Image 1 (cartoon, helix red, strand yellow):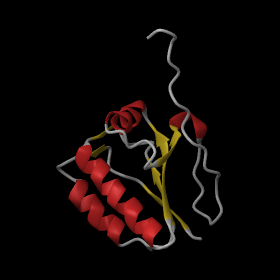
Image 2: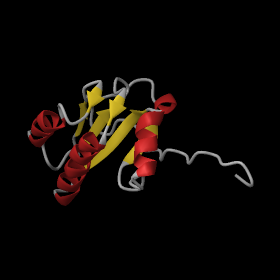
Image 3: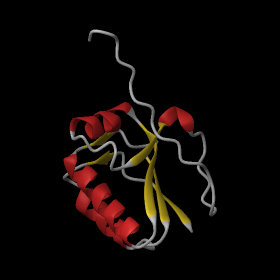
Length: 119
């Protein structure tokens, strides 16, 4: 399976999610798309919807989607929307460099935040 690395804009929101979605539609639907979120500072529900649509398309065609180097704001958005199980993610600290060759990298689920007892 071919791996394709994409880089979203620093803010993925209502203003640009549709345009980013059009770019994603040009990707090979049976590839593994690795979304490098290292430069992503903010994402709202429009950006999240764009990524969920891509996930559905990729998986329907034998491909996949993974978000890499996800920051706390994106993790919180996934938690609030209860969609953390829908998008495979890795935390920002888990990856230093992403390779674009097939077979690059392993998938590691993002650890759940620790909760204090009685909280």
